[in-house]
Length: 146
Image (cartoon, rainbow, N blue to C red; front, top):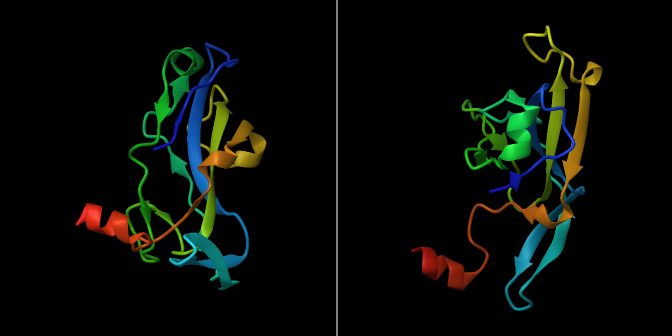
């Protein structure tokens, strides 16, 4: 679960907090058990449609954001291309980078129709990069989970 805190926001403004997860590169990977490492296995599969996950407590006031940690524990990932539940769709055996976006909401707008016209900031935490899998790649973890 990614958890973030914010500072330097306007306490009286409203903010929408979102997350997306983007491919790191155009490669597919495989896990080499004998080396205990990931190896490039070829070209990436076509990327899944990009989805933004809007934090369910949005919009936040700046005051709220300065006082609390925002947790993305309800965000769900799937490899199901036909997902109808708003989960973020990823390709298994590909590397991804989560990004957190904070958007300062204009006072008289009901929704976000054009993100490019909004004041926003994007945060990337390199340490959150991961490889999506649909089966555990470590036999010890498999035994532990079963």
